[in-house]
Length: 431
Image 1 (cartoon, one colour):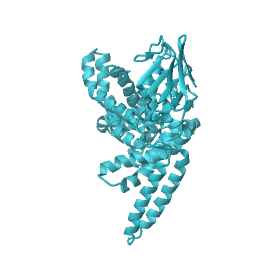
Image 2 (cartoon, helix red, strand yellow):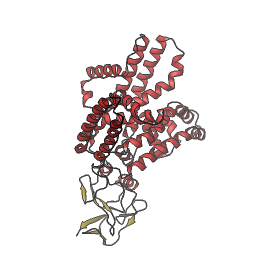
Image 3 (cartoon, one colour):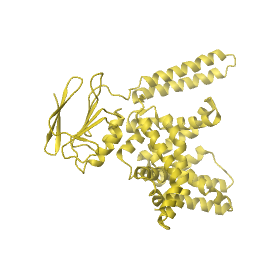
Image 4 (spheres, helix red, strand yellow):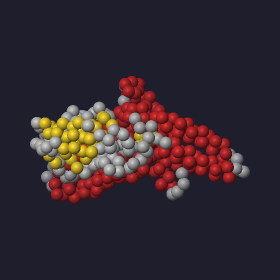
């Protein structure tokens, strides 16, 4: 409640994203915002994860270090238990807190264990306690990302060129993304290749927001809740607001980048080719006389990976699409605009479905329904698609939309759309 009180001084949308980044509370986030983060590979930032646990321990670390071994162990355990309970015992949090608790216990015994051993013990213990955790996609993604950072990232960091801090950031992000890629493809479908740069651009700011929320954000919450000093709380939270806006801006930018996607059809050959290249490269590097061969191998590897990515399906659809969640899309050409029609039966999953299909903008957006009940979803769709023109029924309540008072036609590439006002709704048909 203190963290939520500290978020009141931020704007409504900023506060919703702030709470998601700090404590994983995404209830106030719009469907468009959630869809953007999922389509760009940033949705893990909106759920409490091991990163949140690490930042909590970082905040309380100075105080814990002043205690003796027993006090430090008890204090660490208490902080982890309180944090896990406060965030609703999410599967990813349980994995992270169990790993941190076992690590603290091993250090107190004077027998520190490796990250792989800690992760293995934590996962095994949690599955013994609750076998149904294996059915949680959040738990599986958390474990896979941790494996990627522990097993893949070190090798990637050593092989990446450039400054050490850049190699560590890119290698860690790339290792985690590669490890979760099979799960994402099976559970959610194609994955945009923009996810790696998006995570690099947004990850550092999200980490600072987590740290700020667990330190200065708590102070702002106390000022707001106990002392009723809203103006002072607003000043304290201003840097957090700038950081949250940066993260949201990265998600908006990345969701409109026309980047290719990695599908199940291309992921298998790409992973297999990468393993072959990795094996051959290790063999070639063991031969000191093969300098020219190593250079050619590096160039061939880069070209192969580039080809495998570029043959993936492009994000921009080129044909008419009818979405079962309540929409139809007609692509543009040189003489005709792109059009999205939102039916009266549109569902809350529609924003994510549009982005998954590569529909992230449109010239004309038509709403068959425009009443108050549908307004939240329709406003999210306007925010998501940024249309040049919005058409709605005569008595609509959608800000910025034009009411269609008489039958109208829109020329498309081939058919025509006939838009007719019928009672409190629009009827859209193609001819």
